Amino acid sequence: MTTNKKEPVDPARLASLAEVAINVGVRLSPGQDLLMTSPVEALPLARKIAGEAYKAGAGVVTTLLDDDELTLARFAHGNDASFDRAAGWLFNGMAEAFDNNCARLAISADNPMLLANADPDKVGRASKAQSIARKPALEKIAGFEINWSIVTYPSLAWAKLVFPGEEDGVAVQKLAEAIFSASRVDLPDPVSAWRSHNEALGRRTKTLNEQRFFALEFVGPDTNLTVGLADGHEWAGGEATANNGITCNPNIPTEEVFTTPHAGRVSGHVASTKPLSYGGTLIRDISVRFKDGRIVEAKSSTGQQVLEKVLDTDEGARRLGEVALVPHGSPISQSGLLFYNTMFDENAASHIALGQCYSKCFANGGSLGREQISAQGGNQSLIHIDWMIGSGEIDVDGLDEAGGRTPVMRAGEWVSLAQ
Image (cartoon, rainbow, N blue to C red):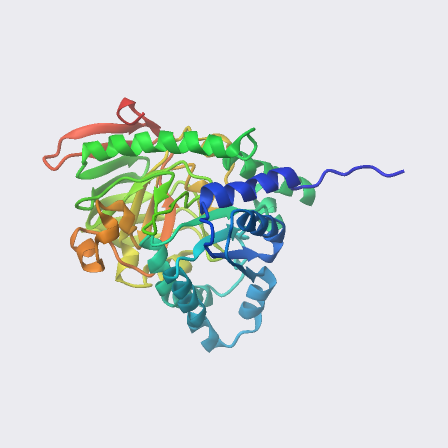
C-alpha cells in the first residue's frame, strides 16, 4: 500500500512565485536576456523561473549557481592570501551584460549561520574583497540602470533556524508557506494582488514626497536618532521604473517606502530591533552612535569583529545610504516570525542601510552623475547593508528645516498623514 506524502514545497505555489518573479519582479521584456543567480538548493524555483522567462520571450537565460559546501571548503582549506581575493572578472562581465540591457534576478536562500564557526577576520576580509570586486555591477543596480528583482526559496538550513525543533520537512513546509504568503502567491490572482499593493505604496510615497521633510526623527527604547534627508530626495516604494524604461518590483516581498538620507546630517544613537544576517554571520543587538553623519561608536552582542570589518570597508560604510519606513502592522511583522533574512525582516520593521545610496531616490535621479548625487548628500560606498530599527515602540516625526514637527508614525504605525 502506498500513501501520498505532501511535498514540503507546494509545486503549484512555486510555479506562481516563478510567474510573479518574471511578470511582477523583473517584468522581463520580450527579447531581453536574463542573468539569474541561485543556490543549488533552489534549483526547483530557478527551473520554473527559466521556463516563465522563456514564455515571456526571453533572449537567453544565464544561471550562476552557488553552494554552501563550496563556500565552507574555502574557509576550511583556503590559504590565507585567498581571503583578500574575489572574482572581479565575473562582476565585470555582469556589468557588461547590464550595459547591454540584461535583466537581473537573484534567488536568496541563505543559511544565516553558514559561517558562524569561521574565522571572523577571514569572513570580514572575504566580504571586503567581494564588495570591491562587485563594484562595477553594484553601481548598475544602485543606479537602477536595468530592471532587477530578488525572490526567496526555503532552504533547509534557513527553515531550521526559523522553526527550530521541527522535523526537516515540516520546517521547510512552514517556511515555504510563509514565503508564499508574504509574496502574495497564495492568493487567487497574485499579479492582480501585486498591482493593488503597488498602488497603495504609490499613494504613500506621493504623500511623503509632498511633505518635503528636511529630516526624520526616530525615538524609542535605546533610540534617539535624527536622519537628515538628502537635498532633492524622492520617496519610492513598490514598483519603480528603471533607466531602461521597464517598470519592475526590485524586492519580492516588499512593504517599505524608502528614500536617501543626507550622508553628513545624521546624529544621535540607535539600536537594532532584529538580528542582521550578513555573509553567513549573525550580528545581534547592534548599537551605534552617529556624529555629523558618521558612525563613531558601534557595538553588538555577537558578530562584533565582522561588524567592525564592515564599517571599515571604506569611508562610506559608516554613513547611511537609505532610510525606510515600514509599519509594525505589516503582514510580515504580524506573522510573528523572525526570518533571520534581510529580505523579510526589513519588511517587518523600519530600517536604515549602511553604504551606497540609490540614485532613483532623487528627483531626476537617472540624469544625475556621481558628483551631483554626492553634492546633494547621497552616500557612495562599496556596500549596501540594511538593518532594522523599527518596532511597535518607535515613534517617527518628520521635521522641516525650521524645526517644525509632523507626526508620521506612532508606536510603529502610520498616522493619518501617510495612510
